[in-house]
Image 1 (cartoon, rainbow, N blue to C red):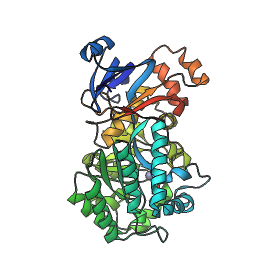
Image 2 (cartoon, rainbow, N blue to C red; image 1 turned 60 degrees about the vertical axis):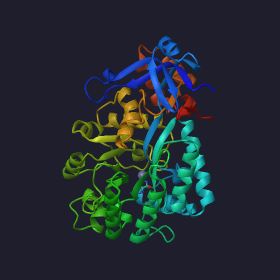
Image 3 (tube, rainbow, N blue to C red; image 1 turned 90 degrees about the horizontal axis):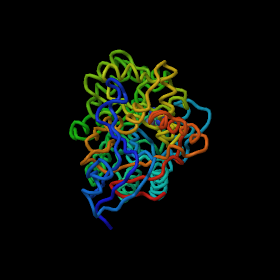
Image 4 (cartoon, rainbow, N blue to C red; image 1 turned 30 degrees about the horizontal axis):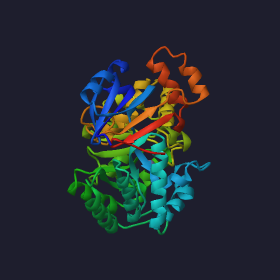
Length: 429
Ligand code: GUN
Ligand code: ZN
């Protein structure tokens, strides 16, 4: 097999943020990308790359869009089999659907089956990296990392710690949560393309003792990410107030235990107080927008424009299975719709950036993934911008790239995903 592969098509790269000035100015288009040893070797014209790598294998995708694989900054892989569960809001949804399903991950066989099913499904949707919550069971972390490792995939995950307000069988303690998380972190963090994230589910399901233990573990391992949930629904916020009467606000239930910092990922972050917004920005934490989840569970409208304008670091995510899709295309569409409900339409360049480089930035991995540039890891997606008759008839009359790509963002799904490359190798699905 040739060491170098050249993909030709419409190769989209970012050389800036589309949230700074004219969104289209952040994007560059190229004719070809060369992949070597799992990384991007070069981007350029077809002729230049063919001359530079005369022995390369070549795969031509005329008229197709080639871009970085999607990065999903907040998912629950164990919720794969209960996605699209009807009719509940957050707390009831967790108790009725989520916790019974997560209980099944006591079985390592089930954890392995769902890990592989989830990674198959998401690859077919063009997602090449995700940051996942596992369950309380250490085996659920091992299963997910083993499945990702065998695919050469860059992933982040952690054992979801809960020591209260969860059913028997789905609770650890402050001590076992710490010990099991520490052991998993030791075993996996930095192995191949795997990163460990310290993962207290959210403050209602952790005692102050457990939050303190998680904070201690993070301070002992400051190179790890820390992921949790913040201010998703108003009922949840009221519950947090009752559980932590001395806290200044929801964020303070993390902050007072050392769980606020750069490298912190706060899922949802919808109903934020001014103090919370200030503190999140001051420490340069990451907020993760989960738009299909926010409409599906009825949580609220994330303030993308306001939060971006004040300089917050923001990623985009499906939140599978509170989110109603595995697709980052569908997720971009939902982010657009929420923007519209708030009076601010997001540009296609902004949506594509959020689903790749923005999410990679939120995971502090934008030097490795989320863009196509020499030296970056070769995780790519090839998109068909005419994947269904409905999309094709609209993109056929597009006047420019942005009009051609927007119908796929709004109406596309896994049928738009022609090819996926992970670490320079084509994935079969
Ligand atoms: N808050 C705490 N746990 C969860 C979860 O699993 N999904 C969502 N959407 N919100 C949560
Ligand atoms: Zn979540």
